[in-house]
Image (tube, rainbow, N blue to C red):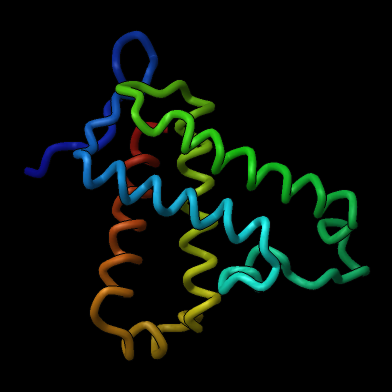
Length: 143
């Protein structure tokens, strides 16, 4: 059985058991989310800056501003807590949300929106996506 990457301690905090490479991966992912949030021309821009649909309350300009603020705040919190040995639930949730945003953005930017598109991919992109998925599953287990 593989060791768990995240473990809930008795005091309620979440212990992070990532290697230096694992932390570097999470940090690079969070920095990419921050960069994409600040640059509408970024490859992930389509996923982060979706067009407004006036028929939906979720696409209200004020709601979008709030959502953008949350994205940046979560990714910045990940960067601030990257070297911490333990996380609070709020910090772990920020890690989870940031990794989800990155996964969705990678899928949209690379057209990985169905099984056929996913099956046609190979190499580093697949490894990158699978690593994010594994981190999300591990983190979800303790949240």
